[in-house]
Image 1 (cartoon, helix red, strand yellow):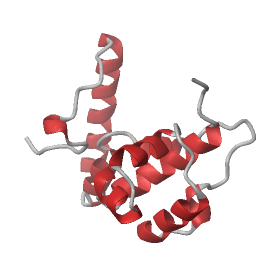
Image 2: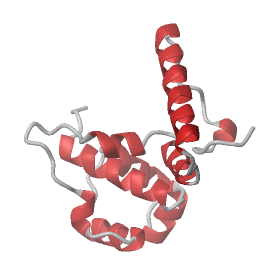
Image 3: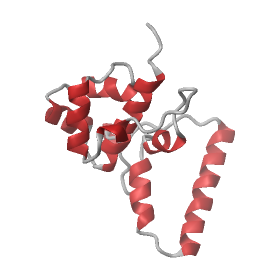
Length: 141
C-alpha cells in the first residue's frame, strides 16, 4: 500500500479539526454527507481522497470556505502545526475550556501543569491512553 499524499493528509487533518470544533462525530458528518463513518475516517487519515463535491459539502456543513480545508501548504508538503495539534484527541475540548479561564495566573498554572504532564509522559515513554468508553472526547473526573 502506498503512502498517503501529504496534501490529502493535510486536508484530512483540517477536516477532523473543524469537525471536532463543531462537536460533530464522524458518524454525524458521514450522515450529512451521505457516507459511512469509515469513509469519513479514511478522508481524515488521508487514506482516501475526498472528491470535490464532498469537499464542497463538508465545507458548507462546517461553515467554512473550501480553501479553509486546504490552507497554505508549505512547499515541502509538511503539515502546519496548528491543524495537526487541533486534530489531537481532546485538543478542541481543552481549547474550549481554556477560553473560559480568564485569570492570567490560572492560565499560567494550567500551562505549567500540562507541560509537566507532557514531560512526565515523554520521560516515562507512556503510550497514549485509550479514549474512555470509545468516545473521542474527555470526560470530567
